[in-house]
Length: 149
Image (cartoon, rainbow, N blue to C red):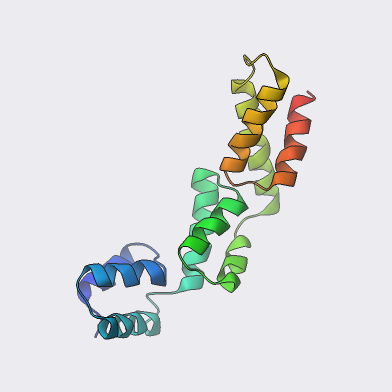
């Protein structure tokens, strides 16, 4: 029998096993009870790691405009399997990804226009895009395209 509080916790939004396990321990469950609760949630289809990974990746890309590297890192922190991470990356359309990177780069480049030194401007733009989680080679290409205009 799945605990109603944890059932509500999982139905409210997609959760990963790691989050649910931590929540169960916070609620005072023992190891055996935690595993039984997790098994019950998985068997009923309430808890699905692949579904969580897909929702997480798609949501973070669309809402926060994170790059693939940051999304992968965050999924690994939540102990998501490599298989599920690979599946999650399919939620990000390549054209949307490139368009978002270009939009972020041009917007930030415009903000940095008052910076006199071009190397400093490039470095700040590079750091911003890397912090957002975009791949280094794509960032370098985009910076060169942005700064040559």
